[in-house]
Image 1 (tube, rainbow, N blue to C red):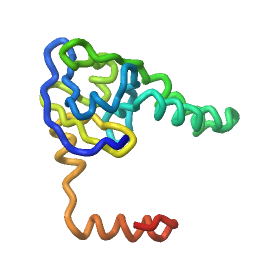
Image 2: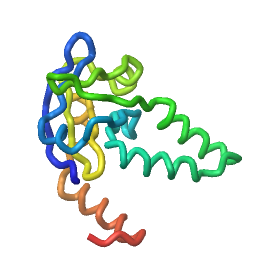
Image 3: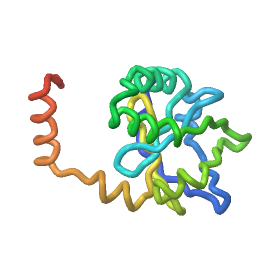
Image 4: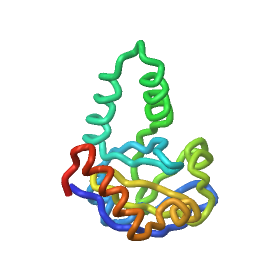
Length: 146
């Protein structure tokens, strides 16, 4: 299972969002939406959420940063199911966090989906060749091999 691709959809006035068919097939019957990094939302299939939450559980409770990180992801998480039209209801708190109003981008990120306001997506994800070269060099310096 891999989530790839970029899709633009519209959030309806009730906060419902159509999940692209290609993503629906991979999400399964229950999945989780939570706050994400960079001002977007993360969507995890149930098995990926369980693996992620296990990592959160393994963090030391005595560490303040670990508690903050766990609160950030776990308190914002909500289980979701698709309705008959292939939509989910994005909770108001998550819509507010990600500034989701109308135009929304759903982007596949291999093991999860990210949901962005279209404006944030454009401002945060416009890369030039030099940006990508610098990121690749940094990741190589910490042991990641392309």
